Amino acid sequence: MNEQIIYLHGFASGPSSRKARHFRERFDEAGSRIQVPDLSEGDFEHLTISGQVRVIERLAAGEPVVLIGSSMGGYLASLYAARHPEVRRVVLLAPAFGFARRWTETLEPAQLEEWKRTGWLSLYHYAEQRQRRVHYGLIADGLQYENYPDVRQPALVYHGRNDMVVPHEYSIEFAKLRPSVRLELLESDHELADVLDAMWAGVRGFLLEEAK
Image (cartoon, rainbow, N blue to C red):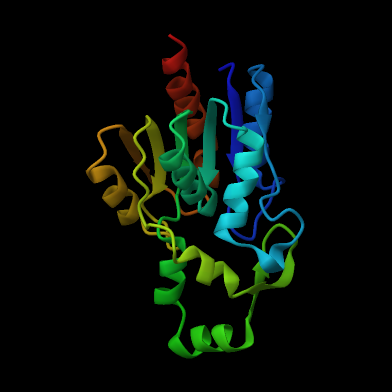
C-alpha cells in the first residue's frame, strides 16, 4: 500500500469523525500514508459537490491514488473515480448514491420549496455538534451529477442492512452491472461503527491484492 490514500468524510461530518480516525490510525500503523481533508474547506454553508470534487483533484494531482469514502464521501469517490482512470482502487462505506436527488425525494415538498426560496436549510452538523445552515446551491449543483457513476476500477463496498439513511438497495443497484464491484452487506446501520475492525481487515486485504 505505497500509493497515496485519501479518505473522504460524509456530509455534516469532518476529518475527526470516528471512521476517519479509525482508518487513519490503522493505515498509520501499517506504514501507509493517508490524507483526510476537510471537504468543506471551512465553508460548510456553501458546500457543493463540485467544490468537493475539486478538493480531491488538488490532492490527487492526477497521480495514482486509492480513495476511501463514507456516505457522501463514498459518492464523491465514485464520481472522481469514474472520471479519473488513474484511480487504482475504491472503497465505499454506505455510499450516498444520488445524493442531491435523494434530498429532493426525502424532504417534504414545503420544506424543499422553502429551501429554494430562502436559499438556506438549517440542520445538525455532527462534527461541530451544533445547528448549521447550508445553501441550496448544494442541491442545484448536485443535480447535474449522475446517480450511479460508472466506476470501472476494482471497488469494495460495505453497506449496513439496517441503514435508515441510505438504504442498502442503492449499493445493490450500483454493484449489479459492475463486475469490478465487490459488495459486502453487514448487519449494521449507516454509521457502521460496530463493524470497524471487520471492515479494516477487509479493506487491508483488498488493497494488498493490488500489491501482489
